[in-house]
Image 1 (tube, helix red, strand yellow):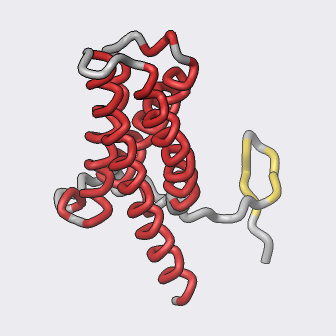
Image 2 (spheres, rainbow, N blue to C red):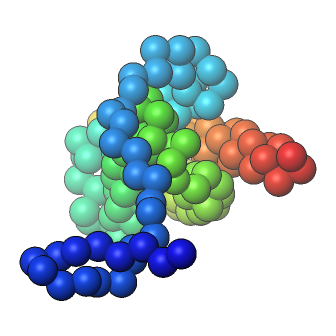
Length: 163
C-alpha cells in the first residue's frame, strides 16, 4: 500500500520515513582518564610547546623551521578539534580518526627530524638554540603520542570490524 501526503491540495509521492534523532551532545567526563584521552591531551600539550618554542624565536629565517611551524600548528588545531569531538561523544556518529592519527604521526616524524636538524643552524647556548632543541624534543614526544593514538584507533577499528 503506497502512502501519499497531501500538500496544498495535491497528492505527492510518499517519502520514506527516516529515523532522525535530535539528541544533544553529551559531555563525557571520563574520556580524559582513558588512554585515548590522555594521548590526545599529551598531543595538545607537547604540540603546543613545539610551536610556542619555535614561534618565540627568529624561525622565519630558516625555511625548514617554517615547515615545522606549519605542521605543529596544523596538527595542534586538528587535535584540539578531535579532542572536542571525543569529549562531546560526537565520535560515535562519525568515522574513526585512524587516518588523521596515522597522517599526523607520519608528518610529525618528518617534522621532528627537520626540527632536530635545524638546531645546528643556531649558536649553542643562545635563545634560539635552546628553544629549537627543546622544540625538537617535544616534536619527537608528540610523534610518539600520535603513533600511540594511531595504534589505539587501529585497535578500535579492528575490534569493530571483527564484530
